[in-house]
Length: 363
Image (cartoon, rainbow, N blue to C red):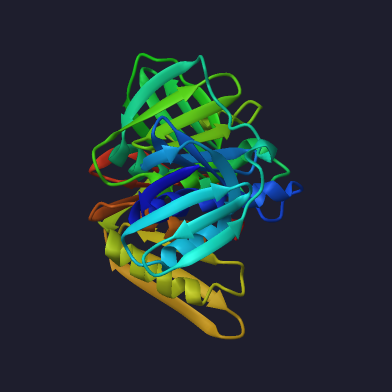
């Protein structure tokens, strides 16, 4: 292998894939990145066996070849190099990296020891605008579970209902659902949240299309010159749509900034009680108030003016409320519930395509 590549392109590609390389895995080669020439381009790839990311970059290829090299060292080294052209040359298992000022040799491992990068040859393909998918994932991944004891809940669920593609996640304490786009395709994919967090880092704000291809076991997201393949989670996702109430007895609509500030301050006094805060909506005073108590530190009540229907109170986890408010982007937010033991719903009154449910705590 002999080629020339720019420091900027190589650094970007290593930054995209190196995060997936797993230094703690049972296979030592998984801590490496696969560097390989493909059709006069250079591909940089890494995998942890559940997720694989490949980034293709332009290169001036003189001789074809492949090698794996330590991901962490490659990323740190190349990011420290000045901008400009880098010469890469493979001599058996030694990768020579030469610039105007630096000459380095990195000991590699044969590319044959690297796991075969997964490929989807047949399957269903659909596209979605990059910016739209990025926004949806930002709003949904926060609700996915990290508990491997219930693997189904560690996924982000893409599915169609009534001609609309929905993206959802829940950890059974909260639920986030976003309507993505109208489609005639029948889509049903349960993708690991870790893969979606990696995809979020890859997705830009440009209005590029993301091409999604899936079969029964894997899904491929192609974003420009980057491909991410993830193994799908097996199992049936809960019928979460039954959880979303269609009408409410008590609701308040107020400035998102007001509720965010009140929730932030109240959460300081809720640390002792595992984040427990009580929201009270009062139809007479036209206010939403949040009360939190810390027996050792004191207590706090924060109020904000609101457009109110009905009166009532509910106790929820302050962290869940803050997470939801951070991913809502509208100026106003509506908070609604039916009783202190019923689910509460957060929504942007101007955008009904996103719903965030928070289950109550027993007060």
